[in-house]
Image (tube, rainbow, N blue to C red; front, side, top):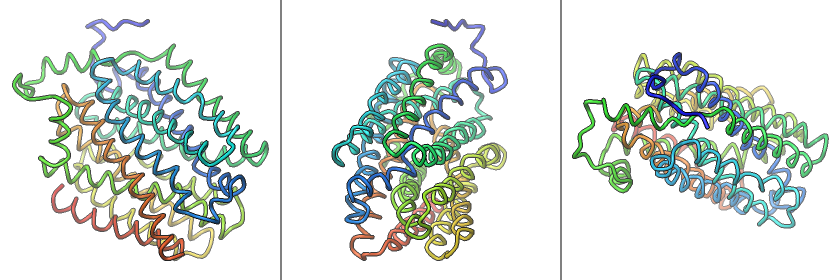
Length: 411
């Protein structure tokens, strides 16, 4: 076990570059894990259980379950991180992931896939939360946007590459075998590197909480107090939090509807994978600069612009009729997400204190990832009621437009 002395408790990306690099590798693995489900799960559902043809609403149950579980675990993760430390929570997240590839491989019914997705939600809630929280612990306040941008760049690059690689591996080895081998390789590598390389970062926040002049001894820091403050008492925090929730409607759309829609249009799984990966890659890579921009120019302007651009990209997708058009739409959506995604989180961190920062991040991520469940239900219901996949795009686009106005007025 590596001990941290007081001399090592310096802040900044440069001063802690080795730990930052280790945590970036971890969030890349976390992204790879979820990416394995992004492209191949929908064809898997159709080939194994016939769900895509019969009921998009039923197909969306795996994303609904993922969102509910991940959102709830985000809240728990922040609470545990304050008490147990970041590293133990992160290791627990990877241990919980171990059965996921096995459940996909031995799946006898759709309920097995939903069960695997529940575990995936727990894994993502525990591990991704800790990668973000730990890097924020050890970096300086003026680097928050850049820090979150780096984190989300690594994570969503992993999501994009995970989806692309899983498409090729599944075509080569078959859907079940591909998911089994790729999934176990990711989890094993992540666990080994966590145990060997990761430091506990909680001592940095304890030092910061002792020295910051903004923290007062009388300020309540209970989880329930922070939850109320973020969920309805503070209008600024509420505006940012609702935007985080609604933007997940877009990610649910990409996860559930894009593979079905694009596969119907192209008949080519790898082309479908490439188009979806463009969304993820643009989102991931662009966050290298958009997080830094918010440190220089402020969060609000980028957040509102990102919400508007993402809305445009979603609406464009069903209007396009070619691979190039769908790719451009995916790229616009991805860049819009890059503008808003790290900077909504950074705005939450700006308005929180070191003593309850992990809790605040966990609560924001709770509401944000509940957006997966709400969004999956909305798009599934829309497609079911209108018997048309394009209805899902319009439902999500309208929701994003309303949320954008709310953020612009109150954020």
